[in-house]
Image 1 (cartoon, rainbow, N blue to C red):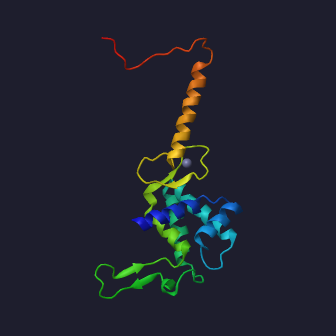
Image 2: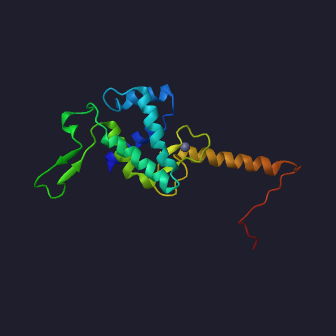
Image 3: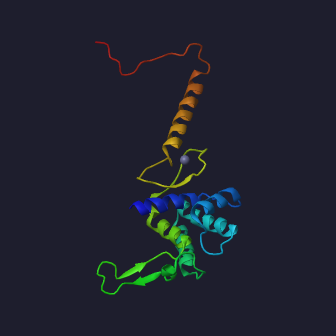
Length: 183
Ligand SMILES: [Zn+2]
């Protein structure tokens, strides 16, 4: 659980790398290491854009497209990113009744793809228009904002707009107190 929480944070950072955003790409690689051995900045932009399609799935065809994108990642053979044990994606554990077959990520791109797969029902787009990283993995259903800060910013913004609209043209702002009953 804890692991998943961590990889979800990583996934979120990854999916918010915009095309050509060198800053975000470099930061990501500095923080987590290379996505796979020998990868280029271009690989981050291309994969992040493909991952983002999962956030905007509407039609069955969109879902199909995301599935094929992920399949492509798992089917690809590339030089190792992690230790030799992670060389094969499928590990067989004869005699282990709980996990007779394990599927293991070979490198970070595999790991990100697995995390995306198990997070399919939790993908959200932050409703704060100024959110710096609007694609997020929700901790619970119906989460509209990626963070407390974004929810708070939007609440303040809405208040301010309401105030501007309602004050305009009024010489004296009227104050009505709700919920106070005279007895
Ligand atoms: Zn946000």
